[in-house]
Image (cartoon, rainbow, N blue to C red; front, side, top):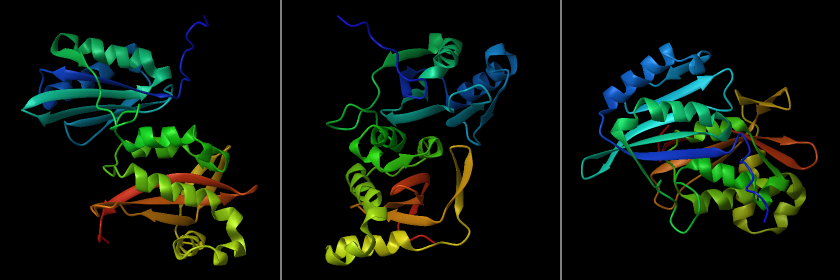
Length: 245
């Protein structure tokens, strides 16, 4: 029998707890931890509100997201989302609040083996068949933690089309109207693009694709660049209310 292998250091992990503390007390505890713990000596904390904090650091594999929620029946829930390589830091946060926490199973996407949220969705795409033509930047995983968009089916379909765009060229005229519209949208060059670091090079994300969910509440915009070899670099994602400016 093969011994279990450790996850890659950048793989997303999540801890979920029933929490007896208020969001304010959790925030104060995190601030104190970062001020006093040598483990967090080169880390910092962002987050304007008590309910959510993002801990970044020079020696971290990724940001650590701490969320305080009250999803049902007035019972507080705390989640710690982090990269596998930052396990020791996540455990220290857990230890700081240990007597107020009870470990529980995270909420999973129905019918799937991954937690809810677009960060986990994009991580899944990285290991799917789309990864042959579609590169998902680390920045996408990081800022996807802040997205409320959750139409995974529509997002997967649009990413499939996006991965084909560099290969279509004039062939798109022979495809259905939906593909033709997508090709026109994705080949438009936008001024004032977002930028992404890829292989130590600053890449301008001059193309965009908008993903509209079936329930028409929040739309997600994919910012991307076409790379040599018929590849697409997805470097940034953001959302807004449907119909918003």
